[in-house]
Amino acid sequence: MMVDKQARYLQTHEWVKKGPGKLMTIGLTAYAIEQLGDIVYMELPQAGKTLNRGDIFGVVESVKTASDMYSPVGGKVVEVNIAVPDNPDMLKTQAYGDAWLIRVEPSSPAEFNLLMDADAYEKFLQTEAH
Amino acid sequence: MKRTPFYHKHLEYGGKLVDFAGWEMPVQYPAGIIQEHLTTRKTAGLFDVSHMGRFFIRGAKAAVFLDYALTNSAGGLEMGNSHYTILAQPDGGAVDDAWLYRFDDKGFVLVVNASNKEKDWKHLQSLAKSFTDVVLEDLSETRAMLALQGPKSEDILNTLLTGGTLPAPKRNAAGVAFFAGRQVRIGRTGYTGEPVCFEMMMEVADAEYLWDMLIKNGAAPVGLGARDTLRLEASLPLYGHEMGLDGEGKTIPILACPAARFAVTETKKTDFVGKAAIQRQLTALERYKKGDFSDCSDLPKRIVSLRILDKGVVRQGAKVFYQGQCVGDVTSGTMIPCWKPDESMRPTDQTDQRAIAMAYVDCRLTAGAEVEVDVRGRMLKAKSVRKNLRSAGRYAVAVFE
Image 1 (cartoon, one colour):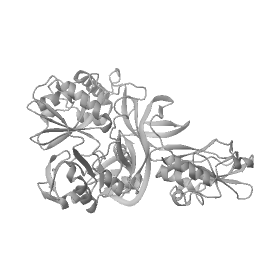
Image 2 (cartoon, one colour):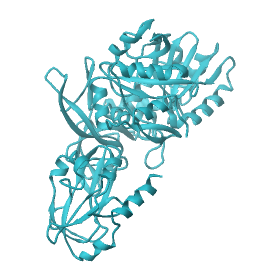
Image 3 (cartoon, helix red, strand yellow):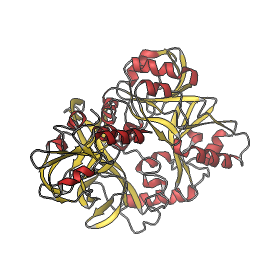
Image 4 (cartoon, one colour):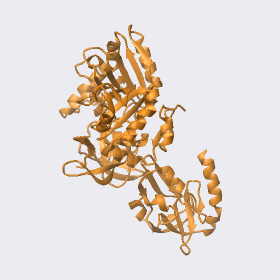
């Protein structure tokens, strides 16, 4: 699955979904993971860290490059999925599921509506590929 | 973009094509960089290296000309052999590094980096003006070239051998042989650190057929991504990183690279481009060996291999610190996979990964020194090591101590 209909997206290939509860869950898109190739190292924030919309929340490193990851919404990091840096291979199959990266308590939930929806992101990917 | 004779094979095998020095080349195949690296170390990797520049140098004065243009002793290179060599600048820096082959009595073949080919060609053309009886010919786009690297590569080639013999017994041996009925110029060479390694040049018309035969007999295609991790694990320099200009745009002296020592014949009597500067670098190395660092002007920094001890990856440009002082910067670095070796230094089925780098640092830094590398403000502990890889029989094995 290249996109998840429930998620909203950044052009830098991060996704965010509503839930669980009032939290929002953030991850890296399947397209980004495919483009990066083998992921060898990840840096994720500590729980408790406050992020503004667009802040760098971590780094993902493939053999070839290191890429910053940007937060699609602002808020406080309440959960970090440390299983992913331990086993980055899970990103290849579960980008929108178990391989989520962080959960935040959004400071202004309306920021979600400012982001690209799945259709817009898919269109963006088509332009990016050419 | 230019395409090699293997372009359709790259598409057929699902290669992810990128622009490399104006060539449309596979950075990886579906297996991915890590798997391709591991396959090369355990069985055999097949690399399209047709993008590299290949110059044919012949004529009565070919050896005399090459002795002047290159650091190593071309005149001393016997037929059926090859060696590492460097196109030097008068100031002792490198125009490029290269491999010189003498497959037969027809002349010499010089293989240069794809990214430097035009520059090298002009450089050699201009030096050749002062010589008569030297003919330079650019074969880069009229021949195909493959590298077959890894413990199983010799078995694969023996299966396909239909005439002549494999170049033997030592590394760098070179000759002409027939595989599946096709004539190939072949050298026991490569740039992966594999003790069993071959590079071969063939007619364009035979290229795809030979590719298919090598794959059919057990070789796996490997892209430029793994080519880079393999050479980095083996501490082999790459022009633009460990050779050429440093991070500040200054010339890196040739002998700053430990590997370059093999490209310089100390006893070479004839004059060659860069001789005076290189001799000063050799003298500096002799002084350093005795622990005398009173004059570091000819070789202020050297290339060292690093193993990163903390979690993380260091990359080109990261600053290296020793006891709080910045001593240089990283020239190449990434995370590199390996097979865990057993007690007899054979690869097991278990894999591991290590962050490895090369760095251009103060000449006084010795092997074993603990340093720190600044990665986005985080100081990662690292150790200067003699090597990250060593040969054990037909395997190249990761060094951990």
